[in-house]
Image (cartoon, rainbow, N blue to C red; front, side, top):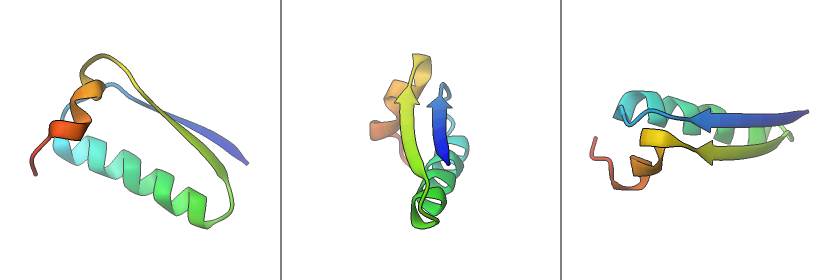
Amino acid sequence: MKLGIIISSNEPETVWNAFRFGSFSLKQGDMVKVFLVSKGVESETLDT
């Protein structure tokens, strides 16, 4: 299955769960693309 995940939040828990879902899907053999938009581009600098 092809899966696109759009992250537009900078809430650490929301971003973490989106990436966790993507990681799980990859392990299941799915094709995953993640797009960071709006506040989601801050996900690299978020502290938990």
